[in-house]
Image (tube, rainbow, N blue to C red; front, top):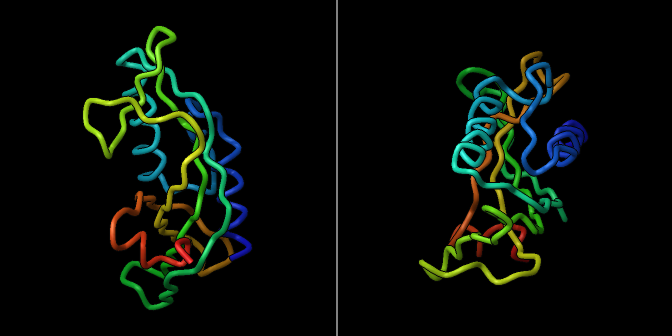
Length: 145
């Protein structure tokens, strides 16, 4: 978990519109490309991202040293987000619970299920995937406790 915390700190140190550097050893190439493509999409649509995501807790979900392709670890990342989207200075952050509405201001709780891979048998770890957890899975996660 110490390596996972280190990777999490590296991710959270990025600015909200900042891409993962190509030489970042804490992210797999596939995760970096996906993450950066999302940032490019915002820019292409003239959107600016402001705010940040801050972890409040990390909980081990699974650790499988025998996973196909090598050891795999998944973690629930309990977080607080203030991320918002702006176009021409106007807040356009959509409310996922109310289509067509702007998300109410203020911090919100979010839960991510993140997967980590190791290129060197467990000496170091790289963030390989991060998915927002919602619904029943969120309610049953350790973050809900």
